[in-house]
Image (tube, rainbow, N blue to C red; front, side, top):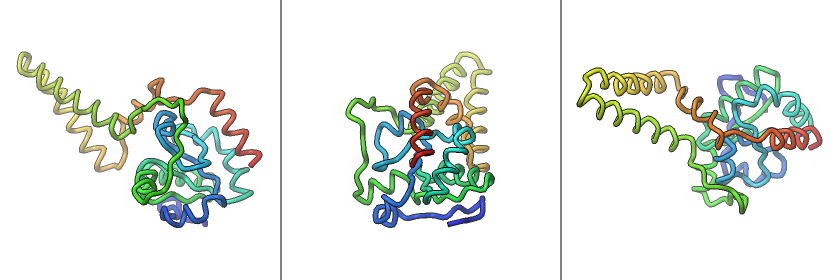
Length: 193
């Protein structure tokens, strides 16, 4: 199960479904995304909280395999890299929860969960809104078009580096943040798993 940090071990949805009980499944999406539907038994530790979760993840990995999950596989691969750098082996779910659901596997959804958009959708709304705003302001004030140009440049940089600064900013919004008590309970459960 050990793989280089740049290329984490990958598990296909069908393989994960067949062995789901053997994995400690860690969903690295935001709490809102997690609540909108996650793999059965998955624990939510947002990507930006992985560093503080390392001791609990190490304890869970000592007792079994870790499967990192996100919407499409990008954030979970990043999490696997962070874990590998700390000496913790983990695999990523190929295609994330999107591929899992597309292949007909069930997602758990808490009954009281609010319907928060997936991070990719939140980013598209924010970026599109900024471009339209820049163009609208640019019709009156020529310098307003600079906003649209800056957003376009940010998208190019995002594609070239396979990172997303807008997602990092949006992940800090209150609806995308875990409550401290929820994260503490998740970490305690992983230590005891």
